[in-house]
Length: 111
Length: 113
Image (cartoon, rainbow over all chains, first blue to last red; front, side, top):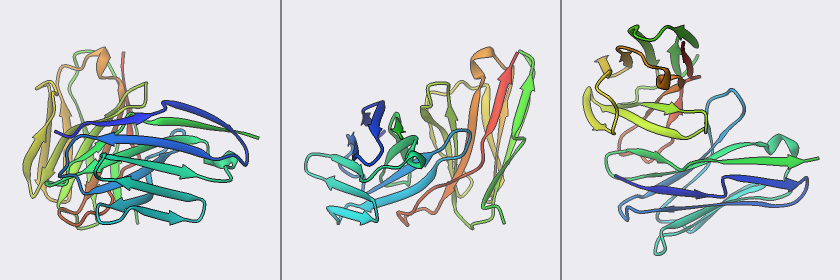
C-alpha cells in the first residue's frame, strides 16, 4: 500500500510567523491529497485538499503545494494564530479510495 | 444531523472481554473505514469496506473483525481485549472514485484495564 511520511513531528512557531509541514508519498497512482486538522479530543477535519492536476491551492491563510514528479506536498500556514495549534495530518489517496495518513505534526503557536 | 456517528464515545472494559463499537453514516457514501489512533496520535488504517466488501485489511490481529450489515453501517468487533488495544478508534466514510474528503466520527476512546 501507500507509504506517507510527514515532517516535522512537532513544530513551534511564534504567533504571526509561518508554519510549513511537508509530506512525501510512494505510490505514483495517488491522485488526491487532503490535509486534516485535529484539535485536542476532537475528530480530524479537512482543512484543504489538492488534486493531482493542480500544483498549488490557497484558501485564506492556508496553502498547499504539490510536486507529483518528486512525490511530495506541503502545507503552508501564514500569519499563524493560537487557534491554529493542533495536530495536522496529510494523506494520500489512490485508486480504491484508500486513505493513508502521515504520522502527524503537532503545531504549537506561541502567543 | 451528524454525518458519521459512532457509539459509544467512551468504553472501559477488562482484559479478555469482547466488545463492539458501532458506526453509522448518513452521507450516502459507499466506503467506510476504521482507524486506530494510539497515544502517539498516529492514524493507522485498520479496515475499509466498499459496498460491503472488505477491500483492505492491514496487519490487524484477527481478534478485530468488521461487520457491515449495510453500506451505511460498519461495526467493529473486538474479541479477547488486550491492554495494547487501548486507543481511540475512529470510523470514517468517503465516496469511492470521487476524490473527496473522508468524514470522521467523533471517536471511541477504548480503555482496557
